[in-house]
Structures are given as structure tokens and as C-alpha cells.
Length: 207
Length: 130
Image 1 (tube, each protein chain N blue to C red):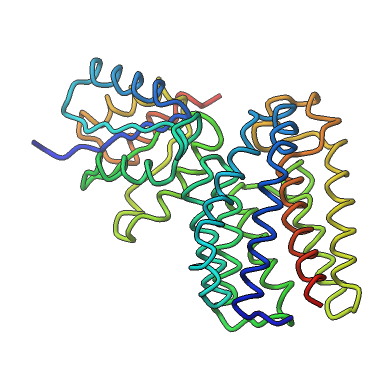
Image 2: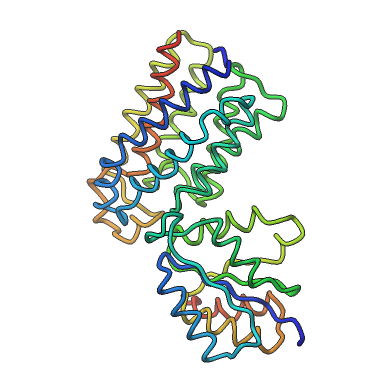
């Protein structure tokens, strides 16, 4: 996994474009069980990230991640701003403290997941983005160093997002719906899946 | 004038935030600093970390600032805003678990009497007690 500025640039660009492209779907999902702003909020945040693409990719990866995090915090405008922002800020912070890729990938990702959990005071199983991020973290740990790691992460994320449909939300806006949240995929889980898939696709393209 | 705890009102809607601030000013008077914000960074419904930081600084008092919020994202963004303040101010700002309108009026009333930040927060949060 080489992390030259061009690699970072491609990764961030592909991820941001995928999130922006998925905005209508995220909005539709959020209209079912939330307040319908997840797509537009994520689009606003990742458009701001694209706007800073040159500055972000000029940084070492830890600083690039923190810059992405701060940009999302300041521009998303909904709870997903601090949640995704905290993920990237914490992952960048972990990388600043003697962690190295690819060996410590699971650790670095785990720091981000812990930050999301703390910020949202939430755990996996509550129909949130953590229901994708936590299974992905488990796969990163289990399959670390395996040649099919990226493929396994993609499968994990795709399956995990579908498993949020039968869950009943107990955190976030969807929890107001109680049992009526059952039967809908969680929009935050979907946006997490979009991000994970985009990063995997970008890395596969560079292998 | 003796310093009193400042009050910040954070709603998804600027109209709700302003209306709540108007009620506080009418019911409590002007001895308590009240700041408000509402709307996402594009001006639509939502909240903005940078507007919340501005509001905290506008309501700043050496006794601290109590924030009243409406729904989920307002709370998460307010907590994020507090963490992004300069370290000396961070510990002097609290987000109250209270209904926004009643909480703001109760918090400001308590603040006007010169109470501490902890007392102001406690009085607002009595509204959420079962």
C-alpha cells in the first residue's frame, strides 16, 4: 500500500465522488426513518472535501485525515458531521502516534470506530453507521495481511449494511419511530458502506 | 455588573432559536447574555459547528456558558463545538439535557440570580427528570 500524494488524492477523490453520487439514495433512506437530510448533508461535506483536494493530498496521511475530519465537522451540518469528522480526526491522530500502514491498519481504523462510538454514545446493534464500521473492523483484524483482504472487507460491508434493515433503531432520529424503523436500511450504515467500498475500489484499481 | 452564566440556544431552525432567545429576553431581561444560532452551513435546517462556536463566544462569561439544544444533530454539533474551543474555555461550557424553550427560560432565570454553571445546568435539567 503505497501512500504517495497522488494515491491519497485518488483515494479521497473517488470516496468523495461516490458519496456525492449516492446522495439521492441516502436522502431516500433517511426520508423513511430520519429527517431526510443525510444525503444533502453528506454531499455538502464531501463537496467541501473535494474543494480542498489539493491541500489535503499535499499533507502526510495523518494530517490529510485530520483535515478531512475537520472539513466534515465544519460543513456537514447534521450529526453525521461530528460522527464522520471524529472518525477521520481520531484515525489521523492514531497515525500521528507511531502507527504505520499497512501493519496497523486495523488499529488506526479502530481508533476511528471508537471515536464514532464515543461521540454518538452508541454501540453496534443499534441500527447506525457502527453496524457497518464494527464488522469492517473485525474483518480488518481477522484478515490482516491476507491477499484477499480488500475483497473480504467489501463483502463484509455489503452484507453488514443489509443486516441493518431488520434492526430496530435505539439511537439517533430513527429511534423516535421505534418498531416502525424495522424494514429500512439505516442511511448512516449505507453511507459508511459507500465510503468503505469506494476506498476498496480505489485500492484495487491501484494494485 | 456581576458576571452571570451566558446562555446559548442552538436549534435546527434559526426562527426557533431566535424566538426562544426573544422569550428569554422578555421573561428574564437583559442581565444575562443570550446568543442563538440555527441552520446548517448553507442556511437550511440543521446546525453548524462554526455558528455554534461564534454563539458561545458571543455569550461568553467568566462563569461559563450553558447551551440548550433541540434535536440530535444540535447536541452532537454543540459537543463538537465545545471540544474545538480553546482549552481554557472548554471546561466552562456545558450542553444541557433539557427542552429547548423551557430549558432556556429556566437556565436564564437561574443565571440571572448569579448562580454557578452547575446550578444553572441542574435547574434546566430538572425539566427532563422523570
